[in-house]
Length: 355
Image (cartoon, rainbow, N blue to C red; front, side, top):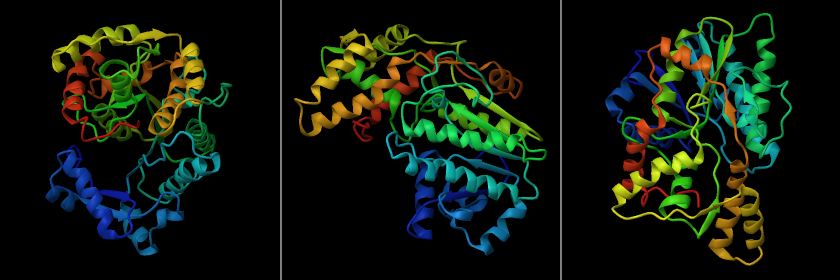
């Protein structure tokens, strides 16, 4: 927000205009954006990506469409196990509505779509920085499948003789800011820290896959810069450590364990790491002898643990070069691990994990 002079329109869901605006003000305050700056240079639009024209009125569209130069579509349902029809309505339908609106903006310079590297599914070869409909792969959940279908919509758009300039951004596991560790929610990475090192659920745990993360501030800055460079055509970018900075799980533990011990001022005894398939077998058996919150925890773990069976390999060469030329530094994991841990440990009691 502070790195551009453009007026920013922000689509926010809410039961009323006042509620939508308040949600945006709270989010802005969290990221250190002054309310005066938000009011002066931003406009909150109450709407819904699942509705035609985002649910905006004709009068609203008439006012904003002539001004739009960039449309960044990042809204998405991130539930992994919703029925595919529900996932498609939010993810594929939302993309179609955003794209159709962008096409009607006469000054549009770039349409940006925030996808995910989870569209790789179960594919374990080197995943390229391009559309991948020609790569056969199965998916672990409906979120991945719907995101892949949304990309297929853009791939079809790219084959038209004349299409809007657009960029697809595929991040890996998004974590807090590299600068200070600040994170709005604690998701996958933090769950791994908690359950495998800080407070293991038991004496054994599944051996993890290579850890691949991207700080949210690096992702946001990269999207802004790369969208600004687009003038025609399309591009696909991978925001990840990739094969260049691949971090095997054993090296992740070797980095995180002493850093946590120093901050917690106690020794950490990691669990015994078992082969993932064996751990899944044991956890599946536990479903039949657990109840209440423990049973829910087992079910949630089974949903997430499937990721640990895979060893993804992301090509990031083109993205790294584009970011380097644009002056955006992508730090190494060990350079921002400290801020991530500091912020998480200071706020973990106030921001609950998924399980």
